[in-house]
Image 1 (tube, rainbow, N blue to C red):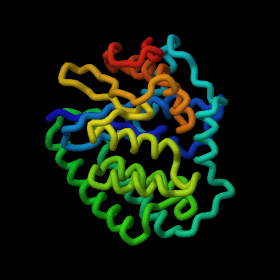
Image 2: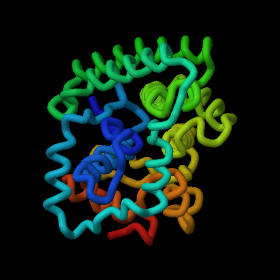
Image 3: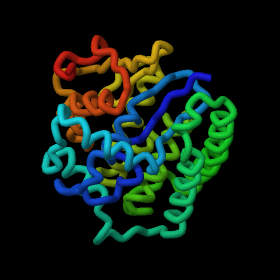
Length: 269
């Protein structure tokens, strides 16, 4: 079996932590996220790195001084803080939020030991089976409630719904259309950007936000084509993502092998 790893938009376990410049989890947060950019069209299941890898990833970042530090005062970080802040937020359906958070936890539990089983076909089949069950529940939620939004289930609930969808291709085109029809602030920009790129790449089209890499049989991760490279980092910032060059640096620091020839010129180390 040939699998790929996908750690979603800014690390799910830290999605709702405050991203202060002094936060020691910032690097772990983003390292988990960068693995989400790895994709492959033919696979048994989408693997999301669990929050348990945060500590080793944090140590990896701390040991790689050649990677520039993230500017947590930058616009992309401000986008994430604004979205994740639930301090004064009131949502309308706490029961649905609880269901979504429980489904999210199931999604993550099956991925808890993914690092030790990345080439295990049985593990992959079990993950695919779990994803199928969760996807069925998510489809029922969409049919009954529509797409869960921030005002409906809070930021954490809306992110949980989008995380589940990231692991269910049959729902992705439907949810992307729903998300695009929502008022601003109801679905996170980062979730939408990642989903849009996934759908585009799956359809054989160029991505927009530079979130997708294909992992080849030679072990090299190759950047999928982007429709417009001249303003790529600006688009990433509006979606709450740091510059691509920083992602690439951290990917390599974490031991991944990038085909530099596939990168946009300005993002090549």
